[in-house]
Structures are given as structure tokens and as C-alpha cells.
Image (cartoon, rainbow, N blue to C red):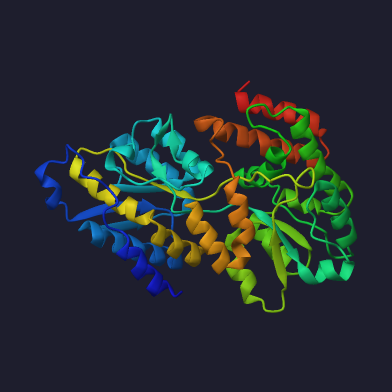
Length: 406
């Protein structure tokens, strides 16, 4: 389906998403424009989101004035605007950041607007929830999975690994001079923590208590892969983009990465790749992966009418047609389960991601606004263990102290 046709369908389904709040008053019709802030500063992304925001604005009877800032600038801008009470009418943010902003009282719960949040996967709804109330909804989400080079696996006679033991055996078989069996992003940022979470969570580990045997076993797996030479020690410095480049250049047979890499992979017609769920400790288990993606929110303001219009646009962004449009444009997963299933049939390369999202978790589901401290502890532990400075157990004890602020 072309983007133009899909967008037309999205707009057609945008009406009637929100109720009319009892306190909007008679000034609702006076609102002719609303402001929106996001971090889609890439030209193509900004344009695509601008189109759908404009289309949804039309159904709400308003013009949406979109401002995009670079991702690293968004949270400082939000915090500054929250302090000066100059937040936009419609606000997007990375889902782990919602807790921090919601606890300040700067956002309005979405329930009073009558927005339909049914059919969302549990983890996705959790990502937009603070203290039992939904403050943000994500039209589409992402997670990570295992990309593999079909030709390399076939040449080595290796099956796609499903368990940790199979993963260790497969990476060893696939490693050659100038090529590693697998690559991950293990750098000292939240990206490194994000990539480690599937291994931590799938083994029963938990960010509430990082110094457990389950967490140590997960970290030991990464240590073993580096020590054996199946993974480059350079993973300590690689970003997810670097990991992609290694895979695309044939320098690693497998990688952990997200679906946002698919458009670039599709451009190389000589690269034959596949996607599978991330291997789990024991075959047959369901991998638990972290949810990526952005939630849209309605900040609190002095104008109930503006809030109402912003909520109508938010409802439009989160209807099924809009979800499908956005997912196809960005290689993401629609947040409503029925739409996601339909999407997986239409875009087979996304099937593994759709499956993984069903059991995926929000990074803030356990710790809320305290998640960043735990994430810092996790990537610090990864660095210490993979460099050999500390054992996984020692590194995770230190991580727990970071997470609790001790």
C-alpha cells in the first residue's frame, strides 16, 4: 500500500476518537491551531510525521504547528518548558521518559477525553501509564531481535540459534578470520543497557535487584562470547549503527538490532538476511525484550479547549489506520495487537518483531522514574565485566549500588 493511500485511510478513520469534556466550555470552536513538539528532526521523518499530524489536525478542525528538535535536545527542552509552563499542546517523548514528566504533574490523564486504548499490548499500555493512569499512547513501537546472514549460516551448516547453548555453538562455528559470529551494542550508554535487557529478563533477572545469579548468568554469556573470540571486544564501543555496519560489511554473521535497520539492509540486494527472536536460556521459552517507541501526551494547560483538540489529534494518531501507515513508513510494530498481526502478514520481515512485542516490557514498568539509575548500573557492569576488570558478580553488585544510589 502506498503511503498516500495509507494516509488517506488513516485520516478517514480519525474522527470521533475523543469525547467532549464537560469543562471545555463554548470556546472549543475558537481553537484553530495547536502546537506539537517531537524529536523527528531527520528531514524524511519530520515530513512523514508532519503529513499525518496535519491530516489528524484537519479532522479535529485545527492546524498542527509541528516543531522537531534533535533527540538529545528534547528532554532538556521539555524540562525547561515544564518549568516555565510553556509546554506545547501535544507532546511526544521517548516512552521511558514519560514517568519523569508525569510525576511533575505537567501531563493530563487521557481517560477523561474518551480516547480508546483497547487492544493495545499490555507492555505498550504500561509504557504510557503512571500510577495507574494512562498519560501517553504510542501508535507504533519497536524492539530488538536477532538478524542473521543466511548465506553464512548455510555455508557453515548452522541452524538459526534458539537457545543460549545453540547461540554459543553457532557463533563459534561462524567465526572466521576477519569475521565474528555475533555483534551487540555493549557501549556505556542506555543503548548498551537496552541490548542487554532481553538476556537479563529472559533469564529471570530483574532491574529491581541486579546482583542476582540470574543476572550474572546473563552477563556471563556476553563475557564468554567475547573471551572465546566469537564477539569482538570492540562491542564495548559500538553503537547500534556500528553493529549494523559490521553486519552489512560481512564482518559479523549475526547481530542484535532493531527493525529500523531494515530499510538500509533492503538496499543491498547481495545481502541475504533473516530475522529471528533473540535466543533464550532454554529452547521453548519466550524471549522478553524491551519496548522502544514514543508516546504522545497532552500537557496540562490553562485552556481546556486546546487540551481537547490535542487529545482529538492524539486519538487520531493512535487509531488502527494511522498505526498501519506509520508502521509501514518506519518499519515499526503497530501497538494494537490485531493490527500488528495483520501487518506481520503484509510485511514478513517484521514478523519476528511483532511476535517479540507481544511479550515485551516497558523499561519503566518496575522502577518508574528510577529506571535511568538502573540503566546506568547495567551498562557500567557490562563495561567492567567485558573488559575483565570485574567478574559478572562483582560488576553487578556495583551496579546495584549505582541503581539504589548507595
